[in-house]
Image 1: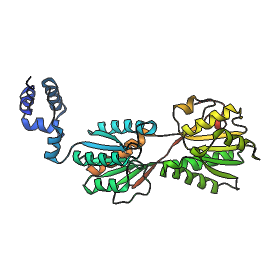
Image 2 (image 1 turned 135 degrees about the horizontal axis):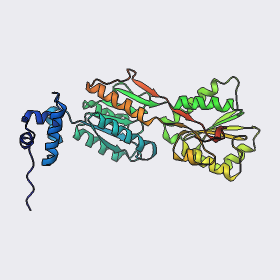
Image 3 (image 1 turned 180 degrees about the vertical axis):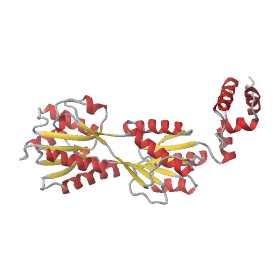
Length: 342
């Protein structure tokens, strides 16, 4: 069976009643402005004829692919939602977003992602701070590809043109103050050290908040993966504190603690209070509802895309700060004292 004949821009130009150069400019997003009516006619003709752009050839001819690469540690929870918003922002700017997962820090997958990105000659790259090592990302940057980091604190300036980071430290600082203000006379951060710098930011905020309290409060840091949750809460409730405040690494950690507390009939918020981060579905629909910090996915995605577009030479509003911090929004529910849900 013979393959169907591929439609050319010559045929599209004839159908649209415009020049070949105009068709090329419209379909390849050239720098010459065309009227909305001309763009409409060209796109309609291309669609009716079944024209398909050879994006690789077009990219090579003008040294531009209109493709942005995204590398994240995985595609669940935060990473998946972030990818959705980044894809929308890229689309609105006229770019395609290709998403790669590092497969839970698998070095083989990391190398393969690196090879594919270099072969595809993406115009720019957005990389989560936990998705690839500095050497791999430096190899991409050395090829001339600009890189913007998501949640990448303190990376060398020769690697990234900038970073758009979530304000985890500030959220934990404020959580520490709030729990102390609500009468907690003992504070605990339940962390996840396997999340590396993400956990480190939370710990930094916890320590900063403790240092700003008017008087010292007994406190400690524990690692979630090393805890027998039921035994931990029994030990906490048997202590001398009248009311203990817990800052949980995220809502998954908080839900495990909440479930154990419910099994032991621990009184929220009189004997135990808790604040988490991410404001996932479970935070709102658990009982009692978990107070949590909401992630501004859309704003973080917009800031990251705009940093790249600014580097590409587009006229967009972008922060001049190399590392921009996106603030989180506190959503309070029953675990920190309120009786109504939001």
